[in-house]
Length: 118
Image 1 (cartoon, rainbow, N blue to C red):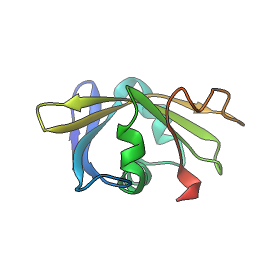
Image 2 (cartoon, one colour):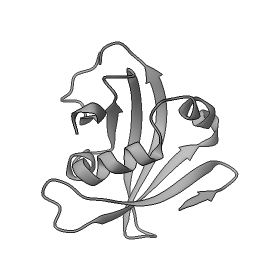
Image 3 (cartoon, rainbow, N blue to C red):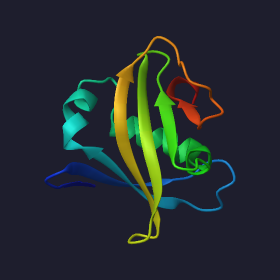
C-alpha cells in the first residue's frame, strides 16, 4: 500500500525477524526531496520490505537509526526509526542515499543490514 502526500511516499508493511514474537507494523516513508535519487537505485521498497521481514529485530534494536547496504550495487541507505503511536508500530524514514565503495563508519554506531546476505 502506498500513500502519497505532499512531502513523501508512505508504504505500510510488517517487519519480523530475530526475537520478534509476531509481525510489527511499520510505515516506510520516502521523502520527496530524495525520492528521485532513491528511484534511480537498484534497491526498491520491496527489497527493503523483504529485508525488514527477515531482519526486523535488528532494525528496531536501533536507538534511532539504522542502515541498509547493498554489497552488489554499493548503495547505502540511512534510515531514522521511531515509534509510531498512531499505528502502534514503527515509523521508518529514509534519511539519505549514498553510493559508497566501503562502509566508512563504525558498525557499533548503529545496525547495518546487508541486503545481499539474506
